[in-house]
Length: 108
Image (tube, rainbow, N blue to C red; front, side, top):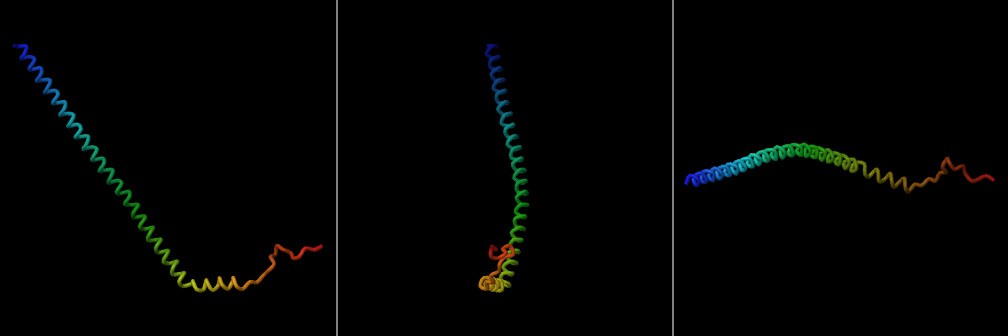
């Protein structure tokens, strides 16, 4: 009878120990998950800050490009007709000239 009581006590101790181990594992996993989540949040915040700076630079570059395109278009509108006329004049008024490198017909 005392043996049975002792076995019962030992069995209860084993069950209690197993339960404590299981609880400790679940608590440790919970802490790991919380730590992992906090680090993931920190990382996402870092990425957000970094890409935010890049977006600002992209917006500034786009604005600068738009201003330059407007200036080019304005110059084209203002000077475009004169440029076309000058190109046509140069192409249609041919003045053949002998280059300085060429000395004329060969001498015999």
